[in-house]
Length: 109
Image (cartoon, rainbow, N blue to C red; front, side, top):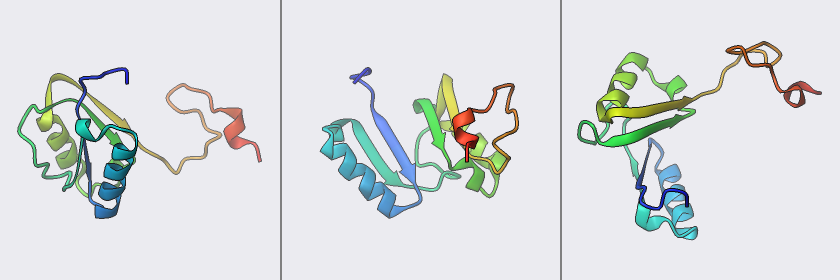
């Protein structure tokens, strides 16, 4: 509860994920600060410059038109806001990535 005034909005294509997120939010006492909805990330149902932070978790790689998706992300982000994208890759984990060494525990068999 580091940011007690934060409001969180979650978007997914899955009604099941949306329902699960709402239930989890209620279970931990955060329902008054959260809003989860089913929406298309290529046509987000928000005004321009709505969010201070936009976090995409393992979804960008599934977008059929990535440039359109990123444009939409930037549209709803406030000036000076932050965009965080976390995604997975099919690369061999033994490779170096962005100058960071691989965690040996991840490649031990």
